Length: 499
Image 1: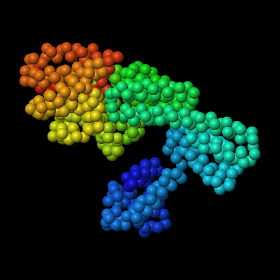
Image 2: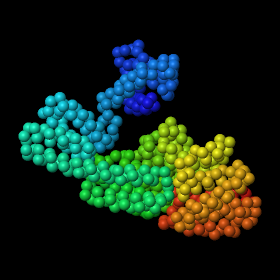
Image 3: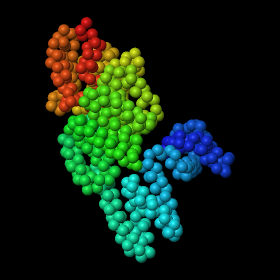
């Protein structure tokens, strides 16, 4: 697809500069060709989709489809050649990344030489490559290289070398199987929890089983890849148990492990576990330590990267929960301003829509009411709405506070019955204590609407309940955007209950 070509072009020009991928260089000798015209169109951003490109090249969007596909293919191949043939070592800052690139290039060349019967030359490349692959735990490359070494030793009758290579291959294959298995365990967990904040009984069982299984694997095969994946699985497991102190301990342990093995250090991985630690401090309402983790995350994550967006979700919540609403606004604008925002997974985009709704409530001057359409918002968060005990509750609260914000009390009354039914079905005191208490406060608001004096006294019970459930062991609900005590005061102030 054209959008993929445009993204590759953007990456290549950001790495090597626009001159390296200039239209004249990409077109080669044929300076009057359609390829040159296509390259100029990409370079100068004349089009953004296939329809626009067809019109730019041929003056039509329905003809010359086969010629256009050939042009796209040729241009893509030249971009990939440029990416492959240039020295990526200058751009890859960390040893495991440089090793992976060099090993892939070396093994590709060695395989071609081997197939073309330049076997001895190929073997001189493969032997050090295998040692490097084992050192940096690139097991899949080590397996490929050892297979070629076994074949070479077998055909040359080198029995001792064959036995040595074969034994090493057996160990690497066993390790590769273990790494593949633990990776699949992790992927299964992520696919089960990616769209939810509330763990069902089924997910709890999956996490418990996965943790025990991966623990056995990493004990038998303690490779670098297995260690990292086990740390990730462990964080998910203890998160569902709400053992946030354990998550902090694991995150710090992993970061210590990375710094003690500098040849395996990757900034993105260090940042990932700083982010996990930050989220745990956030759940424990320890905002000072949360800010310290945020500073580390800012150093680790390149702007507009996938991890950068995840970090900014937690950074936004940190700002909202500490009352730094201006900072939250800047974080929101920073995240939403990049074109990659529209390419985020749907559930991530929906969470940002929910964040925007709460911002609209706390910052009416910076985000005018007329710019936020309530019913469009409801339609845009369909995936988050399926998270019944988590973000769906946040969506309902967002609808209520936005209607309060624009003084639509009659439309607000229409929400009372659906809200009560929802809470009775999904919000339980044992599993969602803070959601439960805040739901009680909202029900009081509905019950005494227009009878201001009758709200203050009965609300004290549930405000005290919220205060009691903000300790180390009863942390924030994960989908609690603004602390409920603070949000309740804002609601009363907006409605002028105490005036």
